[in-house]
Amino acid sequence: MTSSEMKETKRQKVNKLPLYNNCNFDGYDSQKLMLQTEKLRNLITKRGTFEMLIPLCCTINPLRYKQFRELMKGISSKTLTRRLKELEKDGILERHAYNEIPPKVEYKLTKKGQELVESIFNLIHWMIKWS
Image 1: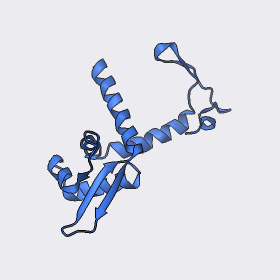
Image 2: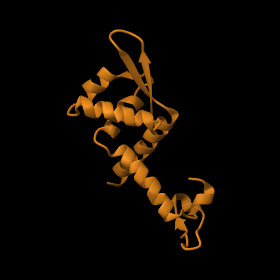
Image 3: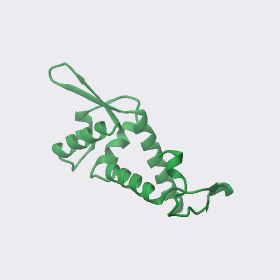
Image 4: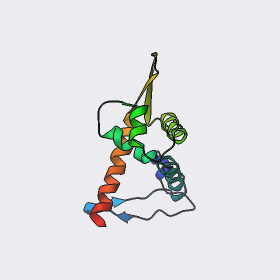
């Protein structure tokens, strides 16, 4: 979202919200922010998606499909494959296929994926702190 998209619209007054450390926040256009939240929710709330990101953020090494299968108990191969493809399409994962027999495919987080995982962990820390 660009700063011009975050500015006050003619129809909607943007409230100033007090933030941590007594900072002021001018606010966002709520309609545009709701669209962005929907995209995020659709990305990380599909069954197994968030759980797939955790092993990737705990290592600097890429993970193979087989490792995901071992870690992702209760998720079918079809669902796992679909989620991996979706995360790759969204730029969260990078997939590298080797021309070998048996086939070897590895996945690792992109910079975008690393930022997403860091943000989610910050939210989890907040939740733990305040629950």
